[in-house]
Length: 78
Image (cartoon, rainbow, N blue to C red; front, side, top):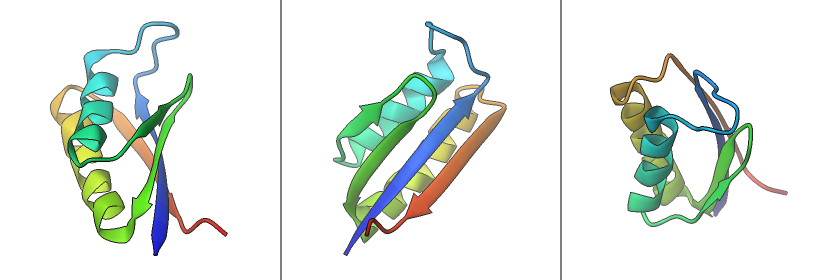
């Protein structure tokens, strides 16, 4: 089955994502998922195991790189 995570990493810096944002995006890519990078958040889609692994990796990488908050939503697309 497929899942989608959408994540936002703070602090937000308009036009200049900080290292905490880049770390989160790279962590999701390292799991093997393509990242949709948006101005206010990013998302990945994939099989359950990959997406759940990406969720863990994204949070750990963002916090490790200085994020003050990571907002994460997990959904099963209709």
